Length: 282
Length: 282
DNA sequence: CCCATCGATACCTTCCAGGTATCGCCGCCG
DNA sequence: CGGCGGCGATACCTGGAAGGTATCGATGGG
Image (cartoon, rainbow over all chains, first blue to last red; front, side, top):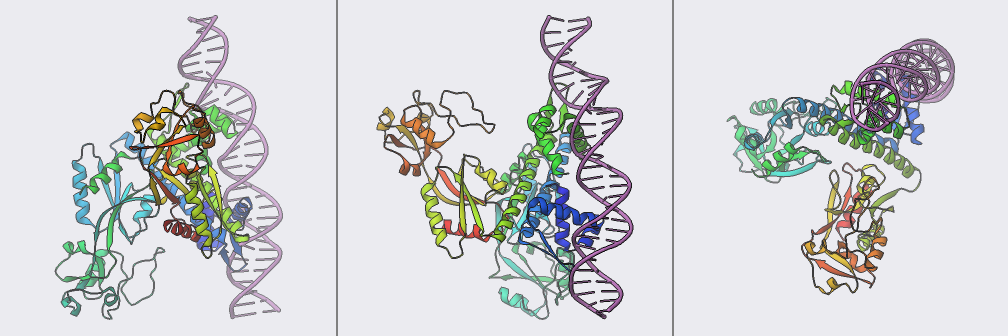
């Protein structure tokens, strides 16, 4: 199986429409149809059920879609890591760490400082990105190590070490009636009529319908909170970064958030190992 | 990057010889040379250093070799799992479990029995294979779940649950002077002049030089022990399978052996999850 | 009942993977 | 020191496969 075929299949399986998939791949529809049926013939199994009005995945197709994504990520990772190895051999080597923008700032600062003091430490590039994007960067070789937050991030397929566990707080506009409470339950928090929970973009970039405001970043969200338009639930440690126009109230039964450091299994990098060791000693 | 190119690169990187690599790939040498330099051009980095007398890997080449193997395994896994999904959709679904021949027999029997009693359990095919081969079967999608033994097997990149930890015993021919001892140290065991430790085949099928006999299987090895030609060190639980012409003596400082059940991360299979759950309840 | 939509088929063209012949480099041996 | 043999690179050619265009056949909606 060639990666080209897998790319084709993923496009069709995601679009469930040969025409659109072909457009997305920058090619005409007939060769795409042919490539897919060739793939099916070689696999000895139907991957798609087509009527002239709709395309659906068979069970085998669902499996292949999943596996193909893993393969394509691995291919991209191979490319990235090789390129970076070449650059490292030429100039000064570096390490890419990725984390959710705005999260674990303090811990990260301590870690970077402690690591920089280690003998033989190399330059650490920090890539901030939207929630849920870090694991993709790790899988595709754009990052060497990530700071993730369970249970929000999917750590399947990575090696992880736990760094820190904390509770969550609700962040409310100053002066709101709920700010007089010493603690809240998650039940109370999900259902405040005048402070609907915000909506984050879906993987496709769109938004689910709902009463809450549409947001793209934490700064934006925090501003909406201080304006009294919404509220948010976040890990304890974010309290240190709050301005005084918002108030944090513990949510007693919210799932505890564990900050972990994660890296691809099979990583051969001495620098990653050293960084992890440093993190565990904090 | 196409998988074809990666296959080519792996062949050359392993052979370190374009002619032999081409032969192994069933093609002529010139197109192979060209394909590799094309790959290098696209990666923007030298992968091999060639003189007209020798070929060596650059640092980037070492990285790509490693990554390419992962990709090729993932591709093979995609093929296998898809085919198996298709067969499962057609007929009766099944699950492939792999374990080292002769190890954890009792535990495995209990597990298979307990699982078969679960509602909704499916047929479990058991694939026995040589040591170190199980992880490859898992990575390439030929198996869904494996019984492994730490620290012997490399569990990097799999999800793992521990099932059992035990010490190790030395297995000696009956009547040997050492069998009078109540326990031994690993130091004593590695250095018995009249019972040199056996040699297992290397990944390439050959054997390292040494005094011990060359063996391919545990049955064979056990027979050599009872003939007084060698000895072996094995987990405690194997005592139940020993005949009375060999004697087991605990090795007190040997690394403890942990039996684990392992499966590919991202596994979506309900059956694997159920089997693991059953194993943990044993 | 006709039309719009969508995947499949037929047929053509282009391009690249792979083959053969050969070159250039280099270490070895007489 | 010169010829030889082994090895990777280069030059050139060919066949097949990838991709494009035109069109068909099926089907659901108006």
